[in-house]
Length: 525
Image (tube, rainbow, N blue to C red):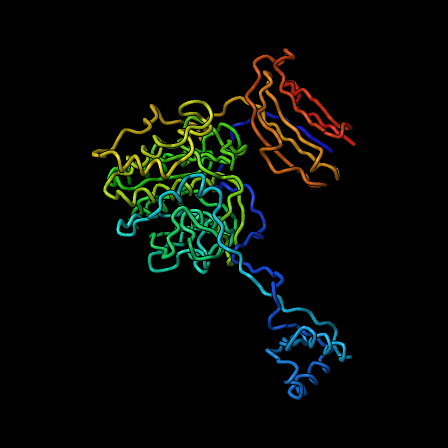
């Protein structure tokens, strides 16, 4: 194992672009509409794929096989690979026939192929979307607008009818058609909100009606680079409003406060109390504020994992409103695929979907009411009450709808107060903390021997291996997180401790992380 711990202080930075809040994309190998070959339980028809030695043998058989019709039945031919699909009268007949031939390269069973069944991503269960049995109410006309990298309208597991519209003139590079997606991000977000359910393929979204009744408006602001200008996002907000959207999902952000953002939001909301903006809190794993999520008029969404633990990458600050699943989220990606992604980008569409779902039952209430009900009914996580890591807690569709059904909402409730002053700096201020990066390259025994943790000075476990992917043989694992600054770096008891445990007993390590160190590199063999 070769752990490397790097420590530095967060510095105030200036960004010119809003960037996609995306951490990782796994290979779309979990594609649930992909077929897998499995042996048939009974070869009733004794069907085989027969591969001939060369093209001449294949052509000769193709011409002469009619004389053997009493023994075999040629279903079809595959000339490209000099093969035929043959159905024999019995398995014994197939074996006898094959043994009599000198021109075969091989013969194999034509196995039954089954399509994978539909999966429910863990996040859909975690936010209790499936416990709202009747799903989205189409007569409500509640509409979701997604500002992102586009939408693969050809995906069989996504809505594609007349209720799906869009604009694509706001991205700055490449093909900007709204109904295409070259970087996969927008299609993944859309699947979390609205992947079709009960169609026996793929996944299902928070709003999973088979008919795809949810109106969607897609605005593409990202091309191939994953970057765009603040002004493009501002114009996209306006377009969402003009399209009649009620919920705007924004899995994007940057660390600069923009008065233009604030003015755009204020102008839209002054004349429209039926539009709710939802954005990703950010993936830097620190207390910086990301915009547009951190404006008071936007719901800032943090990320949790499948065990409802705060995701190590999710930014934390007093602007965070609510939390949703964002670690290892399975959803749609272009080209009929499916993939897992990590990020607050994946958490935000869970909240956007829940908002649209419960709002469809009460379309006459205001956006402020929907927001406050979701905050009031969220499952409290972390410290009691609202905290910087989870906001009001994990969004809960079932509890929110039950609250609406049991209460009369007559006016817009108050929400988070506006700031007393507008920042004059070009980026959000920072809080002192220590960035710790852990890089572990294990040997061939890691998966059943090696674990690790980081502990606070009082012994509390802050991070540990069972919250993150299991260490695999020869695979580099990286964790980046932000620890609060220790008050007195000269007191040994105030040091954080990094531990590696080896159950075999040959390579355990306990390392104090003293803030006086800028870098410590260790090699374990």
